[in-house]
Length: 173
Image 1 (cartoon, rainbow, N blue to C red):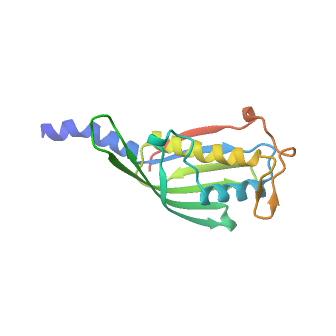
Image 2: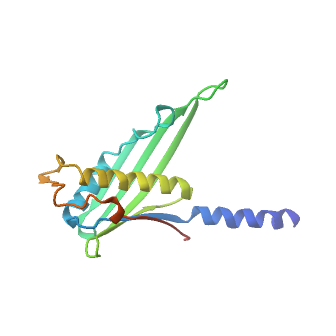
Image 3: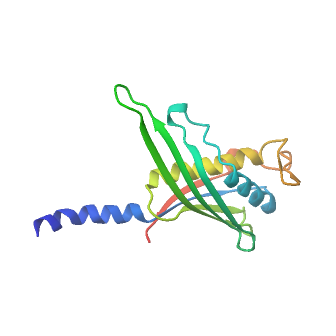
């Protein structure tokens, strides 16, 4: 009985970490159609080169499902890397993501929510969501960017990062 009493706080903490964690970003001054196309492009071609090589993830599998009618993107992604530590053999690491991105083009400004579905560590979701939205904002602000047949003109888009926002929430299921 004593073991169960000691395990209860750990179980509560575990269930808290297992809930869905979300990160959202807004896109003031951006065309909703271009923002959605940009998010699809970033989902299809994720970049993990912003980290040092010894901490860099490599995409092993990336499946993207776009639901245009409901403004949703679903991503199943498998990542891998090998970490090297001093005086230890290389340590392979793997991470699997199940992500749902919902986009509200009618909100002012347009808003997207990045949600990790399933088991995840909130800090990892925060990092992954921030990296996703950083790539979206960078692509939207490039003067020479085109997405499909749609040119992204930086002069029409807001380039002031202070207008954009990212917020992290942890919603228990």
